[in-house]
Image (tube, rainbow, N blue to C red; front, side, top):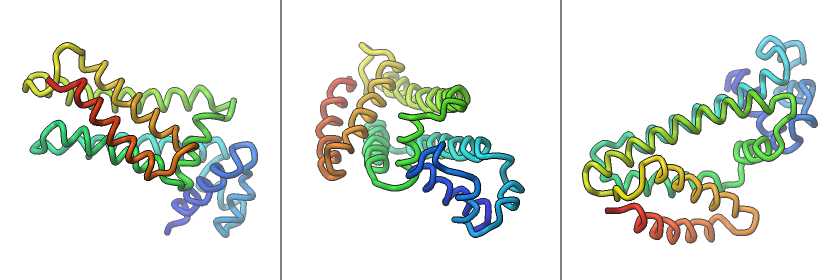
Length: 193
């Protein structure tokens, strides 16, 4: 693992467990096994490092959705279902990246609230646009209802996922997977033609 990758890995874990305010550049350097001045050769400050991590996560998120939906020869129902189930599964796993993401969404560093909002809004716009295109294609093919507009179907798709993912506080990943299957069946009945 290259130094910059190790910096990102270790800082993700630290930000996830200690939060933005509780994580120092010295602590990150110590975990990476480098001197603090060497850390500044990669990032000018903690803010830049934090924003880089969020940008990486946002780009990975968009890429994941593009890959999930980029299966042109796969039926729309299967594309949407697979992306839905995979998304719910991945976000209910207990790992530093998910903890980091959840923490900064719930408790964003005040001084970074605006750039974080802009970054996340941009990735959400891109992802919803991708889903909206799939929904429109489904409507043109007669697979999805035309009684709802594609943007509404895309929005409710994510509202359902986000609701399931927040249940990780109360339920096990297996219980959430079962609820995801049941929720998908209701959602699909509502959007199919």
